[in-house]
Image (cartoon, rainbow, N blue to C red; front, side, top):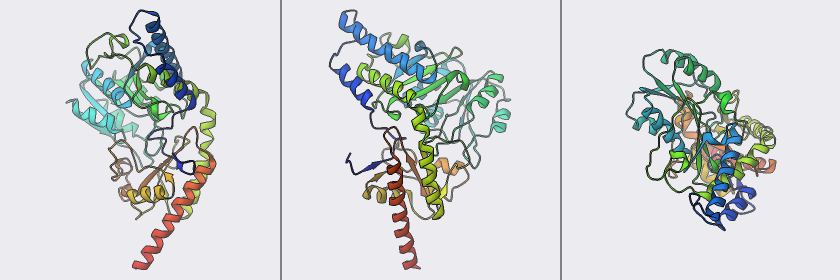
Length: 377
């Protein structure tokens, strides 16, 4: 990445933190199988278990609650499929869930209902309460913070409803972890998904956290790794790096919170020129801004910003490079703005100047678009 470029796409992938890179390289220099009983194997096992404790501490759980997997997608799939094996008879997901949850729920073969959200992108708890009155043990999937708008969901309140109905609650906390404090017990979750690369660790490693009410059933078979929950030799270097990133992220939450000032300052600049901020008025991740300029297509915005040296995203960045109308924005009742939504997301290495340059680049492009429209008219 060029020093002159501005990277504000942390919700897609955060650049690796120096501490995580150091842990990764150190682990790669001493390769060994953590299942081996000799000294090198025991050293590898120690790296894995220390990282397990660090990831657990990030969300306030003991190390034994953490199962390492290949990323957030697998963590979500493992939670949903384990709940099916445990006897849930239907699934409720929110209308703004990530595809990793939505597609796995669809593929489960269980009856599926979609919980609506309001104009701010917050789930309708009254709808959930009524839906939970239907017979049958239910798995509810509710993300902690939306990857596009940053809107934080009332997970603890949803949990009270789910537990009263004797259901299970799975929380996708991939976007929230490392950006806001996450307390597994306070949320009332039964399972919770995490991903290393969203908080400054490497790609290809994540974790599923499970509480005492949940049973994790392995999806791939073989050895007894991860306490029998996931077969396959552990990704020692990736896990060690994940642990380092989790530790630093936990210690840096205060500095992350400061980005809300930069986000809001940019939002005011954009609104003054006619842009619409989505989710404004709701509690949001401090470093996430979603907005739309009517008539300025998302794909065109991304390209214009990239040409100006500013890297941002249109919606989720997990769809093989595709740019399409945001279904999250559509779920918020703003189908008129869905094709024009843009996401700006900072992180651990972002600066106020990055956010200012982002605003400069977007406003310049917006001005050009407006000039072209006037010429056509």
